[in-house]
Amino acid sequence: MILKIINSAFILIAVFMGLKQGYSMFSGKPEMVEMFSKWNFNKTGLAITGAVTMLSALLILFPKTFVWGNFLMAAGILLIICFHLLDKDLKGVLIELPFLLLNLVIIYLQYPLKNEF
Image 1: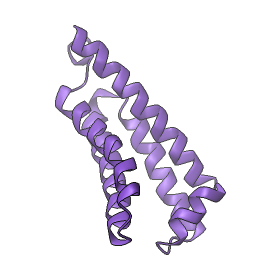
Image 2: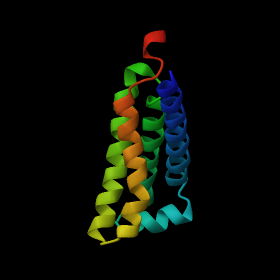
Image 3: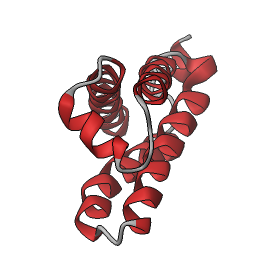
Image 4: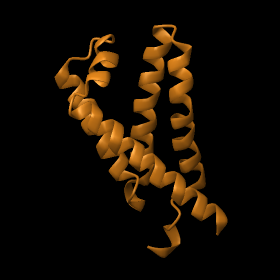
């Protein structure tokens, strides 16, 4: 029971962060444009990445798409980590790593309301 509550909190955090960061990318916030432009993302590419991030956050909320949502979000975070590694930016990697691990822990703990639906 306590693990379900903890996992539910983790899910809410991941969804909130996914929607927040995805919207920042989608709307072209200056800090996102600056970060992604060094990896040759234009505004359209950044908007698409933001839309996929927001979609993956929403998919996490539903039992049938739970794993796919987590997988998409983890893949996006891993992509950003790889770009940071190409730049030899270990600080950027360390900032992204907890979010990747959060998605992996959520997948491991599984959907908390699985038996109720």
